[in-house]
Amino acid sequence: MSLYRFKNVSQIAGNNKILDIEDLEIREGKIYALLGPNGAGKTTLLNLLGFLEKPTTGNITFMGNPVKFSEKHLQQLRRNVVMVNQRPILFTTSVYKNMEFGLKIRQVRPVKRRQIIEENLALVGLSHLINAPAHKLSGGETQRIVLARALALSPKIILCDEPTSSVDLESQQTITRLLKEINVKQHITIILTSHNQPEVNMLAHYSFFIDRGKISTAGYENLFSAVIFSESGKKTCAIDKQIRIDIKADTTGPCRVTLNPDEISIVSESESKKNKITGTVLQVMIQESDKIQILINCGIHLIIKIPVEQYQRIKPMVGDKICLFIKPQAVHIL
Image (cartoon, rainbow, N blue to C red):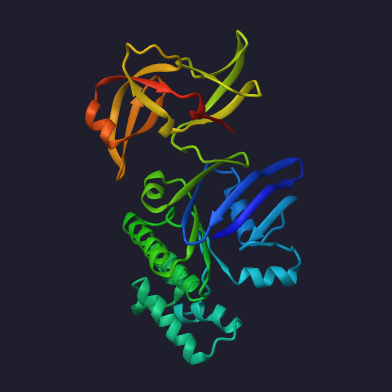
């Protein structure tokens, strides 16, 4: 089921277009990752998803119904969504009272409040901290308590702004496991921002890359500055001094591009193809159950993803020279 749908949505502050989204759909019960550099528009998009801001232009639907940006309507919608911030704030009181606050506002009875709090503290493995002073917790404990507090409100959607960026490695693994478990067992839709590509690979069903307010489904792994120019009546995308790719484009000049790692293949040097480059294999790893990820030095570092069966036929090893074919559709202009 479609949960959110954005059509021609923009968010403008002064002369700065922070978001420019033509079409975005988020479906119920999945985990989505929003990737991109700082200032790309990720947090602004989370605020729109949480009904905390009104877009400058465009239409948003939620569960098939148009979102009306009146305070009365938004208050009802906000009950479906909770936000877990990158550096969450807890009141200088006990963990129990921090978790109780939202339940009190929703007029949950005291006996039921205690039951909900105890259940969710057990879920995140912190039952022993129920009476601890919340402001003295470690970063990892704080993030898990905030996650338990969010779950106590029975949301349809949890929005996480870089949930593992400010905690230690052990806590990162725990939080990642908890998010996966919450999604699977409670069917809660999770939308998170991250700079951590391995975390995203393990956790998210779908990833979107945001740069300068625009969204692409192309991989975050291959992001480059480029120049598009006309040559012999055709458009060519030039990346660094090494790569020239014939593409279809309506624009020329400097730009940013991503190269979709699924649209780059290994070919024989004898094959007569344009858009061919050579490089040296730097790393080989399993990226998904049916894909192998390979890092290649082509003058720039380029990631490709190929099916396991193709890898088993070719078996490129670290240090091998290989030839790549970059399909025109691999290039996404941001």
